[in-house]
Each structure stands twice: as structure tokens, then as C-alpha cells.
Length: 241
Image (cartoon, rainbow, N blue to C red; front, side):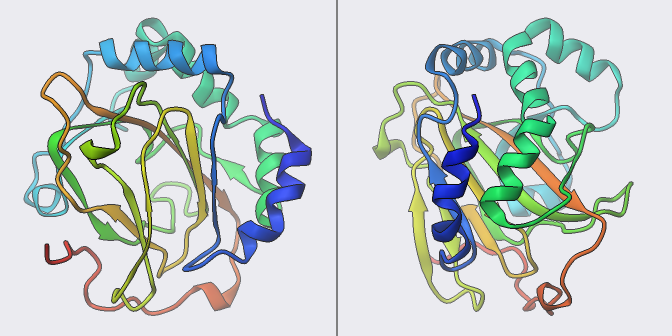
């Protein structure tokens, strides 16, 4: 499933991409496995939602699993979405870590078996996610978050439905990329204090559709001092339409 030679071929482009190191890889998983995972997630019915005011400000109609609070969440995921759950575990494996190290040039990556903030994500119609920079220190392990891996599982997605992942420059003055959440597409990018991203335009899919993705985060025990920069005051924001 993981092609190490591909990582070596893409490494230069990854490291030199703007506004921060990133890459888009289509046909990331074996197609039948990705289709099975999509079918599982589209039929999955155990989703959590954060009802806090902070969440309402930053994101709307976003659902997730696991919750980070209940051990039985993993039992439910393995029982009701076995293929999708196996993909998550594989993407935390040594093979994937070596792939990411060759791609990004970041050594000694450490996975997060708790999937804190990651796992399965679901966005329903009208949903959106403010432009933001992710947390970069794990709340429990205190490891430094260095890499995001997103895998989109939206079979027969229509681009007019929106849901594009937007990348913005460090000054929050310009959108540089709009990446459609097409089926079996992976997006990998570095996490720093000014790696701004999100999908701020409300999702325009039918009520019976949703935007599904998997999110995995990778950590190291330390990070270069140059990556620790002061964030501007606008950490979360929605661009003016």
C-alpha cells in the first residue's frame, strides 16, 4: 500500500512547496479498500459533536470519532468500520512512518495511537472549518506535532459541492491553494505555527451526502527552533465572502 520510492521522488517538491511544505497524492490507497472504507463511514452512526461556543465559532456541522474520552470508541470503530479502522492503524505503522520520513525529511516520527483530534471526520451540508493553525504540542504526551496526513473518502464527489481544503500564507492575506476533497486523495503537510489551512466556505452537498476524511498526526520529541514563531492575533478566521 505504501510506495517508499514514491516518497523519495516527491520529497523535493514536498519540501519546496508554498506556502508551507505539502503534497497531494491521488489514488493513495488500493481502490477497493478505499471504497470499502467509504461505505463503512457513510453508514457509520456513532459520531460525536463538540457543542461548545469555541467549536461553534471555529467549525460548524463537523462530527468526529473517536471522542478522546471513551475506551469503547475503539471497540465500536473496529466492530462497525473494520476496514477503515485497519487503515488508521496501518497509517500509524512503521512502514508509513518510514514513508513519511523520506517524504518530509523529518526523522524519528512518532504516531499517536489515541488519534487525539484525528480519526474519522464527517462534515455535513452547510459545514465549514475556519482557517487556522493546528495545535502543535500533544496535550497528553507533550510531543511536538510535525506532520498532518489527511485521506479523503468521498466517492463520486462533485467539485461544485465545495469542501476544498484551503492553504493560506503566513500573513493570512492570501489563499494559495484550494484542494478538492476527491475520493482516495491524500494531503500531507508540515505543522508549524503559521501553517494555516481550513475549508471556510460552507459545504454545498445534498442533505444525504457528507464530506468524509481520515486525519492522522505525527510527532517528534523536539522541533527546530525556527519553527516556533509567534502567531498573529487571528488564529481562527473566516475570510470575507
